[in-house]
Length: 104
Image 1 (spheres, rainbow, N blue to C red):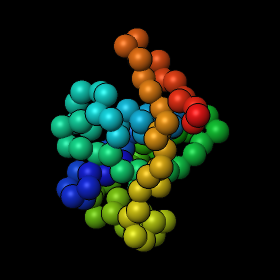
Image 2: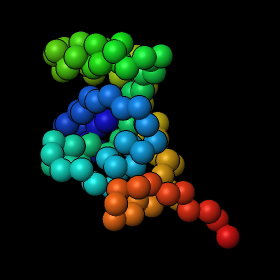
Image 3: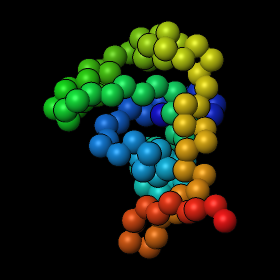
Image 4: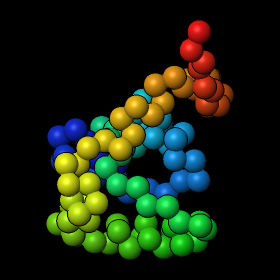
């Protein structure tokens, strides 16, 4: 995830990417992501098991910023938001449950 200014990058792992992106875009979780407005999904990697995903997350977090930017640029040269339209019809209730809102 990246801030609109490109100043901040956030690397994380999740088993529910749509819910996690929704949380980022709506600032539902406190911490680095909300503080730095990381609301744009600019890179997405998928793994078959969580152990491999966590290992890759740690690897990426250890990289210098330039190397991270190079990876993003190679896979998404325009740094466009890959999840620009995600979550437009979603709602999270007071208990943190995510619901899809249907068009009428």
